[in-house]
Image (cartoon, each protein chain N blue to C red):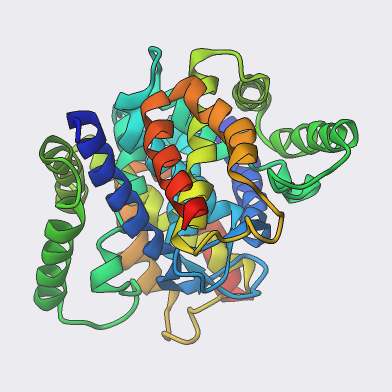
Length: 194
Length: 194
């Protein structure tokens, strides 16, 4: 087996395993309310969000790195599952599961690429770099839109209040994309008042 | 309304409309055969394919532009539907539908961004630039893997032969990523012989 073939075998094994992300269901629904969203299509949608809303970042970003982060950010859910933002859960136990998932999944790749993807994922999780802060902001925007489009979506189910959205979502969106939060906040306030 | 708010209203309208791509079903199934794949999750998966397989391009590429192409390449299906690669259809009529869809969908964006996205989509469709050739190659790889993972998937349904895969898929994959076609070809031949 040539070196190229060996790399390709590993890369295709990773890409085939990644297919499972399409079967991980999230709390949010599609905008038409027809069914719950999966993490594969969510990852596509937020990459498109980032590409479209990049100009609203309040700090300099490398949009390629942001999009790469968003394309891989949820892969660990294949092993660790999705935790809804408004749910209560054991943070330390979940983080340990995600770390093990990252070891396994990125470990399918050739070593150099394993390290590259892992570094991008670690950077996203740390939420400290400019790119990660913007990526995290964008990741929080799309579910708000889905919930607003489906008459509050899962907010009533989780007893979510406008104040809770400010503290759990608003703070994160504002950190990287304050103008986007301004418009969401107006829509959220109108929804809770109605 | 400020200029920023107006842009954001247009951008969010586009992103909300894009949600519909998650309800466009393709001919191929998920790798576990559980259900048909939709074009939203397909778009995520091939962006991840491009990010992972970029090194196998046989020409210089701008990977950011390739990924952008792949993120938006199927949006027109929201209005025009998906045409399976092995199906017979009226090419001119379908192209006219796709052009109208591109007018409507990218037309939701602010004018400068409408033009930018349309240019990227037109470039993909033309399949002439280095970036578009690699993007088109990658777009053809993922369904082959899905079909191989699901015991031929939709090949029997469309009476697909190994020769047909060579001419309809192999030529396009080889054009941008010959090493990837080599490995797929080996797997395809083994499948048809078995």
